Length: 328
Image 1 (cartoon, one colour):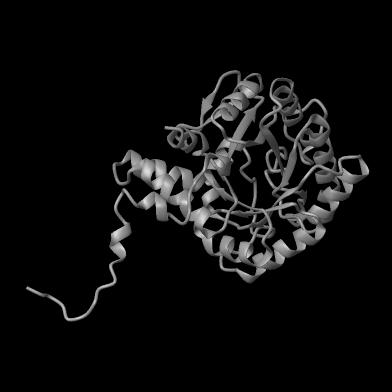
Image 2 (cartoon, rainbow, N blue to C red; image 1 turned 60 degrees about the vertical axis):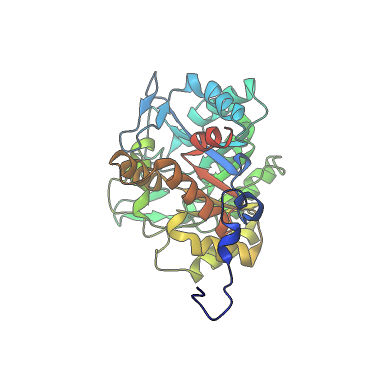
């Protein structure tokens, strides 16, 4: 018996598992991934981050082995975050030749020239107050311009140690120009800058602050990170960073800001990264631990959505898990 009086457009014909690979518009590849690594001078063995189950801070002695593991999985790049033994008001241990990131980069380079080493270029892990710049404690103001020189010194120290890319994340105005000038003046004209160009003042960074021991002692970071309600401002921030010399631009966080990733990629057509941040990781882990989500499917769906929005590369704490899954 005929149940309809009009032709049906049968979109379901190509949705069977047999045909899906042929018509899939967006795919995820291991080459899209960048793996974060926390190097902690205060520990002598791996320490699990309580708010990020399954993720660890590692001691400096293990960083070369970790880089080799990442490289062997086919992941092309890692990004280093340092936890120094000592912190002070001005983040002195961000730029010393014998400090945590500089030693970590050299350790990797001594054994592995395959993996791309990116270094996070922010002061929050190194300052005793936990903010991303110099502070006027009388007014509790984060001082933009005095911070720029320190970021430049830090970038040069990272490049001198062997970093392939430096990634400033402090959202200081003019930071890309200051870093580009410092690199060029010291002979590192070919060291690219991956700018955290549109970094929002987000609740989803909470677990990272435990991992990096970078919680702030007063206020918050809303005076220099972006308002979550703003979209056009992100385009302006990205445009300024490109004009100042950024080679790769980044949006952070990722999934809550897919619209920003899409707008940025469509407008600027620059190499675009997205940071699938610690809170996004922890939410999936918590839901999976309670049996509310299928962890593997939730991970893949989240990362595919980031690629679909326009990201060329994804920084994610799931990088190694995804690499193993894709390699099956």
